[in-house]
Image 1 (cartoon, rainbow, N blue to C red):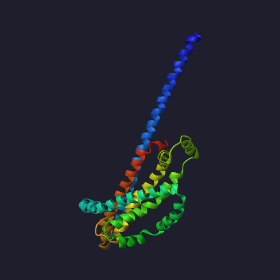
Image 2 (cartoon, rainbow, N blue to C red; image 1 turned 120 degrees about the horizontal axis):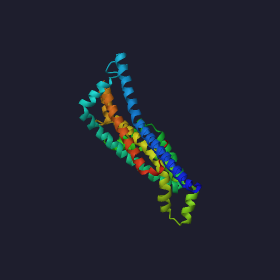
Image 3 (cartoon, rainbow, N blue to C red; image 1 turned 90 degrees about the horizontal axis):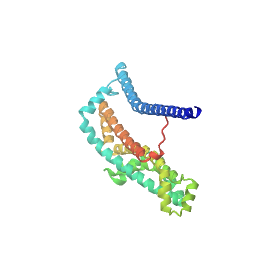
Image 4 (spheres, rainbow, N blue to C red; image 1 turned 30 degrees about the vertical axis):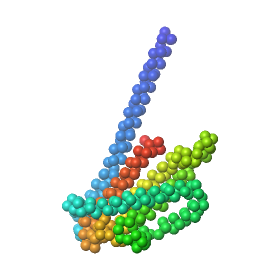
Length: 285
């Protein structure tokens, strides 16, 4: 009887463990769904609360429209002048994206040179630091004088703003390689290009995407600041025009459009990071 009871007890124990495991997986999935929905709903709730407080402050303190319009007035401008806002967003978006690509590609290329040529880093990195310390409003007039009054100086400003964070992060990422990895590649008789693409680049990608997310926002800022110096179209030019005309609803609507594009740009880079770096993503649940 004892021998017959043992298999039964083992089967019961295995069934109980299976049930507990299924319950744990169900709790884990529910927790994951909860965190996902919380991550979506909390920003929406925060925006709604902000808009309500904004509207309440304007109504309670009777703030004049030319000083601070209500959210309703801004929303009306966004609706009635949507085509005009989009036509001004287009050149700013082109300048920001082109500057983003130019600045980051230049930074990645120079970071690669720095990793393999220490003397180049010692010579050029101080210059990069010095250029980065110059305020954007001081760089913009110089670039306008050098490149004219078209889109070129705005692209250059956006590129310069993106350049330094990516240079620093990419250089550190390419060097952040464990000695054991390099020793293993040496034992396997790997070529320098194989070491670069199989070891250094994968290790640098998390650092790179951190810099790219910063650059996605700062590129838009650079394009807008460039348009302040001399431009008749673009988000920056529209901000200047609406400020001089005391058209606060248009000013706020323009800022909303520019900020929305910057947030969208940031979201695209974040999505690309999640797609390309699934191996590096950790979920804290």
